[in-house]
Image (tube, rainbow, N blue to C red; front, side, top):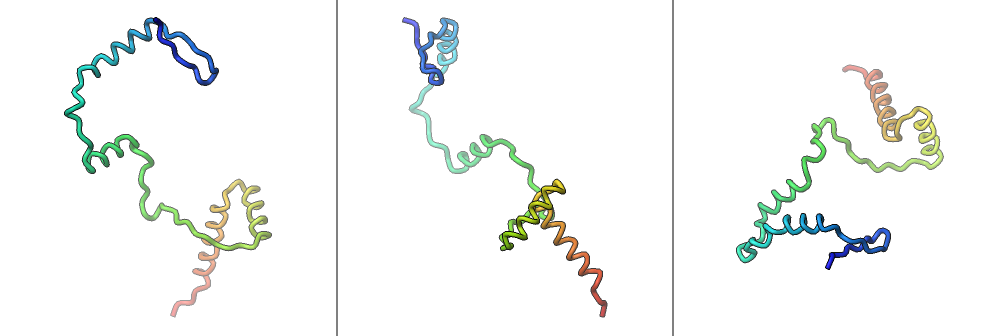
Length: 116
């Protein structure tokens, strides 16, 4: 009997070729000799290590000065719409526009400081 495989995307049954069946048998042969009675659960340290390995390297960590902080602010809807329109025309994000505004205000404040 030729094994069948259900193709769920097209809802039809296709026949597996004998070559695929032979490859499957060859690939699963080593599992037949495996002794599952000697298997054990992972320790918490092994589980953490396995999780890190499975996730991969991920995004590189940033220095503390390069990290961004999330800030919740309340802005009038009309001002926000005007700011979004300006940012869009300038080709920058809303966050970039707000950051530039803060930098400009701080720079202006530094220039107006009186030294005692």
